Length: 396
Image (tube, rainbow, N blue to C red; front, side, top):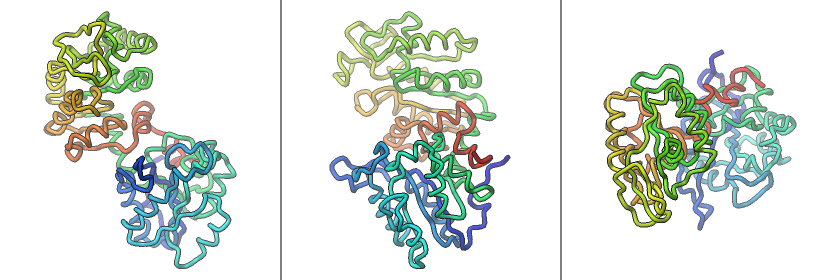
């Protein structure tokens, strides 16, 4: 069954409840200030479409942070309500809670158009996918829209269970559509040559995606702390680099795969005696006992560039090193600039750290797609769908 999107529903004079991912970073010194509004900005297209197409009320919902199922003013959606009101140039009323007795009254007032429910995760029932909580949320509206791709991999009340109350009256938003269309280009029939770049910290976190990709890619380039268990599994010394025994065992398993020749590992490193210490270029694979690897070296960057040359599809998930520190950012920034210059390639960046890195590099606009959902984009590539998407299609 094909997934329906918001522009396929009749919204005129309907109350619409819509799930977004407004889980934005707040300034530690001033928790009323949002430091990166990208996730809200990405939702504006769907919000404006719903309002322009005659919805009588729009009830917005999201989580923010990890308040562990109870109210915590630190995670209030008030900064989100304020920012939305500025962008939409109309009032956005923030409720005291998602189950506030006054919400139904509020929705009956003619002057109230947009309501933002307070943080969903102030209620333990949200993450528990509690049926009564789903029913309560559903009681506010005639139509349900899910545009929260970043949480579509969770079987929570607002992304999953709520669909049971909106048979044939639910749909995806435009951000969800963009994410799915982009990820399908990597999952379903990627144009070849297809190169994946995987970095980050732990092999155990990405074992499923590595195994899935190995059958499909022409080359799998591994960097960041992810590389050291692979090097150790091959008998190469990694010194004090981040390297868990569990990850070495998983790396050995991958390197015994029939497609092991597709795996490309660093041939030199930027190392230091301590985490974030003075950088040194190490012109070989083996890292001495008193050093730790913190970035791929210049020869590795050139090797990875050569493997990316001529690629038609590229997936990048995870940085090549400690890119937050300029001394260990050359590998990650070099990959970002290489992808930005690839002619005719479909380039997809997914995963929180790689998204931060590509934004920092200044070339995010030159990528074909930068995913807003870290864990969700990984799970989509692993499984070809997500629980929240399945629930929109088939119910729960």
